[in-house]
Image 1 (cartoon, one colour):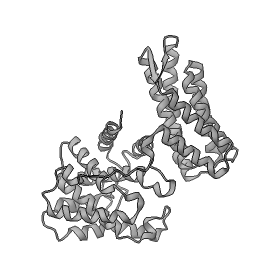
Image 2: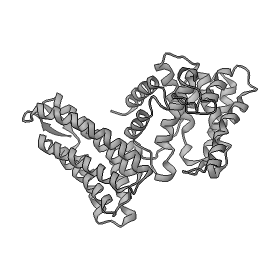
Image 3: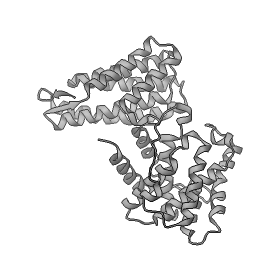
Image 4: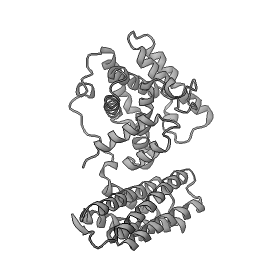
Length: 363
């Protein structure tokens, strides 16, 4: 760790810089989402470059030298995008978000502490890895950016630790024979897609934590049962569709049919009525634009509202690993979940879930 003394900084100027930084952060988040849909949109690339350039300039004016050096590397990446020497890919957006997050933390600490500890050696390694893109061939440039991202956030690496204790034992959910049965099937169904590996452990754990945070509006067993049977229904879809990023309308119709399939699986099981309702509603949206019934707000089962948020988080952090070869960082997930709060998701549940996933991050 290195130390940065803040005694010589103008706190009033720093506070103004923070307000402007927050504006640019919101703009950057919006532009990143749009560029993932339109990666060659020159106007949006220029706008993102200008936003990062302005942030870097403001840091320079306020005297935050360590962050200026970090952002210079990011600016160089965005410059290559504008020169068409590099194509906008997910890793660029994720790096930008992580840089903004590191800068935000540093800026807030500078306002609160006389001396700020920061990871100077890590920042140097990240900058060094990014600088290698200038000598690398086109295909290797992205690999250097991925390495830089993993240095900055090791959690984005694809690591599937061995689970000596089953997740149901860990969560004390072993009393239901039906849930045990479905969970064994779901664990085997993970073989259908590499990016599903570990899903049957990750999702139940987050659901139980979220349920506890909401003071248990749903039975843990019913909630995890719904999630597990959902995964089984998804696993029964054609492999070609499961692994396809952009679906035709006819293929999307097939995807939507998994809701009915999951309901059909649960239908004969007595005592699973709540799980059945959760599965039936889990693709309904808070604003009424979901399917199959177009339900709105509290008309949607609370368990389904919870499940939709956790599934979205799982999709953001792990669902794209088959295309980009790594997990997405936490900040990316928070950005996207927040973006659709009040539209696709229950705002209260989003607020509590973001609190949970932040607390789960290693210090």
